[in-house]
Length: 131
Image 1 (cartoon, one colour):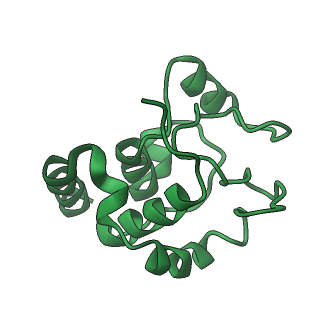
Image 2 (tube, rainbow, N blue to C red; image 1 turned 180 degrees about the vertical axis):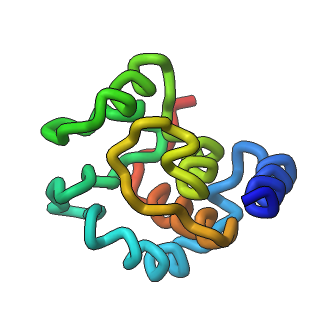
């Protein structure tokens, strides 16, 4: 866990706000297959056990319409948590450590590069951030 946190910190410091651009969306789509048992993304996606992840980059946590989030995730969003590439990287490494009380049962992506690639894939399905 410490090595993963250090690797993410190094990636964040080296990539800054361009974290999603540092990943490979095509590789991320492949890694995203691990997520597909609970999440959907892309045109026509619907909520499953987890919320739709189309447009997640830049969205406030716990706000996708029609999904029944944990109170912890709703509170995180109400408290200002937005799914930036940096926040997603931390969440994808250890979801239950990043949002205590989340319903997400996935333990996390062990490799920081997998997280970066998934974030790049999800960013490709998200509108560009407002300037």
